[in-house]
Length: 270
Ligand SMILES: NC(=O)C1=CN([C@@H]2O[C@H](COP(=O)(O)OP(=O)(O)OC[C@H]3O[C@@H](n4cnc5c(N)ncnc54)[C@H](O)[C@@H]3O)[C@@H](O)[C@H]2O)C=CC1
Ligand SMILES: O=C(O)[C@@H]1CCC=N1
Image: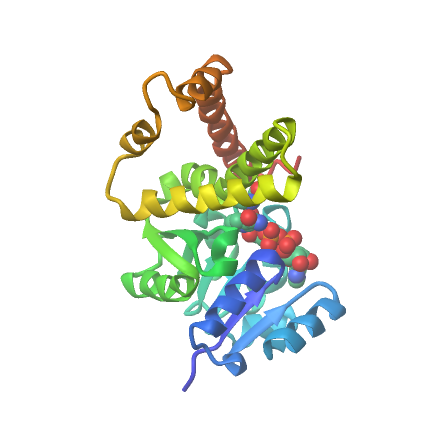
């Protein structure tokens, strides 16, 4: 018998995951989705051929439930689901900050829970998904979560104590690179280039640098040194980055993201 997987609260991350699973060979007939608005549910059916159901139906029928609502909405969703999820079903949370204990306290005793932090490159099958087991999740449950999130990119198992740090690094990580590209494109404008050309130059440089980081086997310091010629252009730019404290700013920024992930765990909404 086929295993039914339900994505509950199918927004940006839920849909990215869903579309990746279908690209990887999951049958749309085995995929259930829930959405708050009926128009959104119909959009998902039309786009992916999946079946929109209510949260309660998903809770009763799916073998695996993937919860992709905002952390602030998770308590309300769990109140609705908890009476209907049999204790042998796997519950996967994709929410930032919320610990597996939050789910275990609200679901039937013994329910296996896996916490996953993925990121938006799931849309292009280049996600980084970080996976941790709750206290009732077995190696088999972790392997199942890896199979699902492996459809949209790389996966890594970490102890749950590292999830808030991973959320700061890879969960939010794509935003920092987009921000950098935006700022560097503005610099291109200052230097007199048309915006579309500046954008293309920076994006291709980012892609080239990313592939080298992934494939060259070289340390990032060595890769940067190779670009930095004596008395050349790059060292002048690096000096400005150091003068403006960009390294310290990045360290502080990621620490702030980690702290916010911890805050979300304590239920702080804003
Ligand atoms: N956006 C990102 O880059 C990442 C987000 N996440 C996590 O993924 C989760 C979802 O984030 P996004 O997809 O960005 O948010 P989103 O707002 O696009 O999606 C959440 C969806 O849940 C729906 N929803 C809320 N309560 C519901 C309920 N009771 N029943 C049915 N549907 C309900 C909302 O209508 C919305 O469509 C969050 O918990 C976030 O922490 C994780 C990694 C990266
Ligand atoms: O900003 C957020 O809270 C979500 C979680 C990681 C990326 N986006």
